[in-house]
Length: 96
Image (cartoon, rainbow, N blue to C red; front, side, top):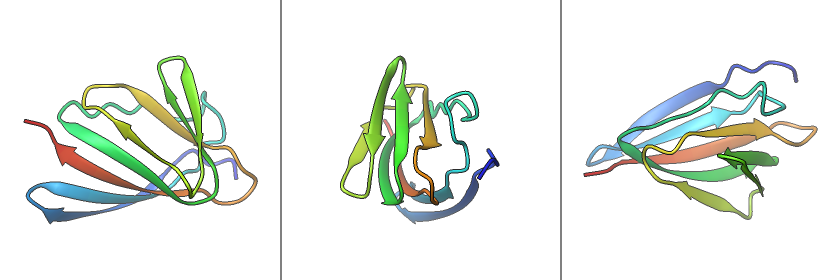
C-alpha cells in the first residue's frame, strides 16, 4: 500500500455539516498531505484499521475505538499505521 492518494466521498448531511469517507493510503508522515480546514471543525472516526493523527509535533494513534476533534484552522496529517486498509469518516462542521 504505497499510494498516498486518498479517495473521498463527501455527503452534505444537514445545515452545512458534511460527512467525508476516506481511504488513507499514506503510510508515513512524509507521505501524508498537510490538511488545513480554515472554516470547519473536524471530527475523525476510524472505521477500519489504525491511523496516526499528527497535530504539530504530537502524534496520536486512532483505532475503531477512538475519535479525535480538530479545531478549525489547525494543520494536521493522517496516515495509515497498520498493515491493512485504513478508512475514516470525518464530520466537518462549519464554525461561526
